[in-house]
Image 1 (tube, rainbow, N blue to C red):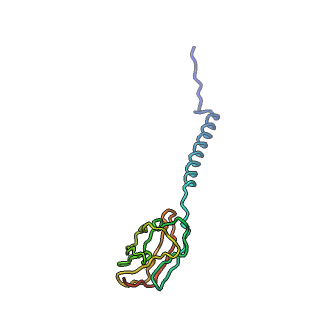
Image 2 (image 1 turned 30 degrees about the horizontal axis):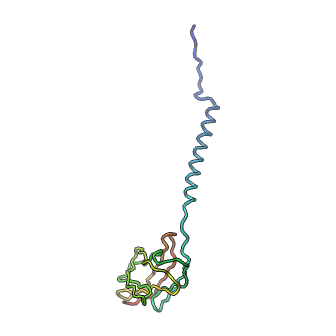
Length: 154
């Protein structure tokens, strides 16, 4: 007795094909859900609640108000362009000394930040159109931007 094998042109039955397509769709949906939920869960710290004002006559940025428990080290300072010998002094009466301001963000020194504090600027040579940015790196935000039409020589 010879058995003849049936010739069948279909590789997989239609039911198995549908089950495989549904399984692939479910796996892809799960992968997309995980990726989207990870992106949505990235939390950024809110910018510091702080207010500044520019004192053009004295080449200063004054702190108008600051939230409690805020300190200067939570902020960075930079100039928009390189200005030769640009420095700042925080609360000059406190004798904290001059610190260079460059186009690279630099963390401010750690001390409490209160209303009435200020940053005073001067340069090696008088400079004009000097833009200063105060940044809050934890939230990647510019907290304050001031452009001084002129900065006096130190």
